[in-house]
Amino acid sequence: MILAEEVCADLVIMDGYVAKKTAKFMGIKTTGTLGILIQAKKQGLIQEVKPLMESVITQGLYVSENIQSLVLREAGE
Image 1 (cartoon, helix red, strand yellow):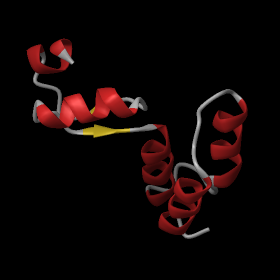
Image 2: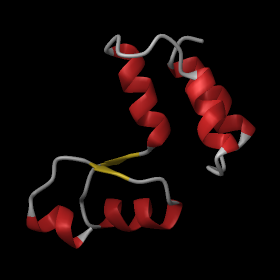
Image 3: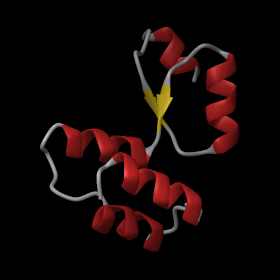
């Protein structure tokens, strides 16, 4: 987060809850892997979020079922 401040980053990509809360406290805008996937779909870069979300979950990213549902709803799936 110090680097984000030094380079005046518009956005930092991170998935950790504590890190995101700290960044928010510091006034740094964040998004996570799933937010990137949603934006990629909205921009027409990918057709579906669900298989990619399932892939990152399989690789070890914890995502609750509630968040999975919210992400798919936001992505229109």
